[in-house]
Image (cartoon, rainbow, N blue to C red; front, top):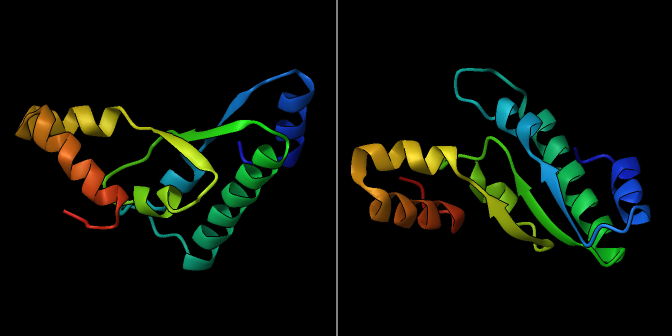
Length: 115
């Protein structure tokens, strides 16, 4: 989770890389739910600050859990995040359009070009 104490604990344990869990952000951006934009922005801020702190401590940063074509761009824009772990959404889309197109569409979403 994007919690400073967890970042610090990972560093003390000797971790060279962390993955910030984006599940809470993903839940907040689910189109079937109604979350205030300010809450979503606060969560993005927590993720961003955690990524910066981890980078400052010399760790590589990944992020993932619940990222979709519709919500990935805000997380992908965080410079300190070097890796996005997105599996389920791509595979589900690939069942409909094929893996090559699903990956191509996710790359477009990461760059901010929605489907």
